[in-house]
Image (cartoon, rainbow, N blue to C red):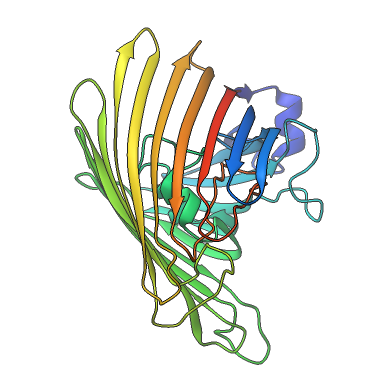
Length: 346
């Protein structure tokens, strides 16, 4: 990360308030990996992709001290493919985040395009960053990581507790609730313990609730690593054919742990299983391994190994932090995969 303090840059980026204290930070993630998957019914795929552990991105964020404990805050973030140099979304420059807000001792209020609390929380529910081939929760869950036209509130941390609330405007002329989304989240973090829950409800164009998803779980640091428990429940099924089934849900469970070997190396393992609440026989199970090695505070190597078993109606496969899955098995087909990647933060 690089803080730009040059007066000229601040003069261009921060209009007005000559005596106000302002800062701008340029930051980013570059994450590229080689992946191999073998899916029954479709064959093998060897690929180079961007965003195995974290999605590659470039961003700007800043704050201005308005006095009296009040801050003006903002963030602009654009996703990119580090294997090709292409934008993730060619229809908008800042596809990941674009918001402005005010903050103080009472918390922070943001308006604009923002990450959902579910997106932020899934990364804390397993040792696989809620991404990579190894994350069962990421592979089977279906949720929206960020929304447009959001009014968001993040509370201050009080005795380890923090609350988040988001409402995405549907901007419909015929129905004020059409295409709107409401998200609530609560977290507790104190000492070695972390607990969290995030739930979202998204309306269809006619204003009726159609899509629901909930993430919950936590982790505990036992001294040499962490133990993780994760849970997902949603009615927007992630297995082909993906359908919304009102009143019918897919539930996923994950148990995992990692161990810090020392010298910057950490190993982790996990088991996940999914239960289909419909009659479509889409249960699935997965075992996973991960090894990470920190070359520095900013540069990390990672490798994952995963094996997924799909029941007769399921065709889940491996995803990652950013790419669209390239090797979807035939219904009931098993999948094996391995990744080798490098992530650099700046």
